[in-house]
Length: 93
Image (cartoon, rainbow, N blue to C red):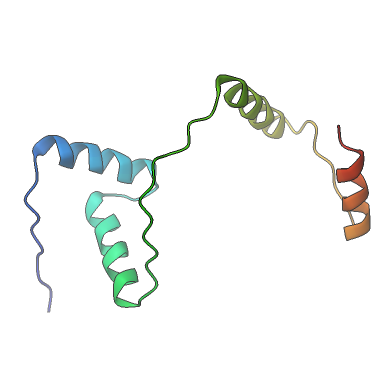
């Protein structure tokens, strides 16, 4: 048997929440709420309320460049063993 849960809220809150749910990969705010409630029922929900970390402009530029490099297949190394990976990490400047 299905039931409907209604949550009164301001229209602006609903629009912002719907947009954020979409950014998080959910098809709708309803889907997000179903996932949250199901995780809660399984006692698998981890709730953490924190302010988001804001990156400096220098860090943002660095990560944008890294993202561009990955997309273009540049500056990517492969390792066939843990020791080879550790060697690459130690020699990385």
